[in-house]
Length: 163
Image (cartoon, rainbow, N blue to C red; front, side, top):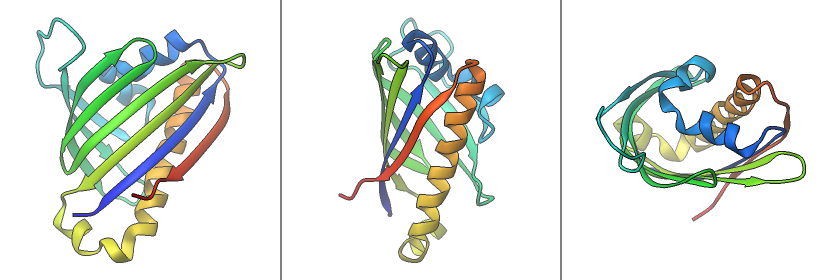
């Protein structure tokens, strides 16, 4: 299996509560983030946000789709959200939000392992494409959340974190 560790940084001129609400409302993601094909709740009567699960399908810029389940493992409004992914991508993600003088600084850490056979067989050859693909999705997401919040995306950075 191929493992990737990403960091995406967005700076939005929007209040932290608005950014938080947009990011944790998985049901509305497909309405504003083009790469998200669909989101389906796994459980409908969960009393808290922690342990809520979703099946998600993403359409990538390279033309393939990925489906996985995402479960909130730690919810700390409006500053932190951790999740666990199982499916065609597996491992963990973490959203960290911080209020600044300019708005809200968002860090997204995505540590992910691919489970699709073709991705793993070709991993050594396609790693640069996978990095570009992830960055393109997150670039789209930065612009999309800014548009959704009627805000400006003041900064956007992408890093590949080596193990």
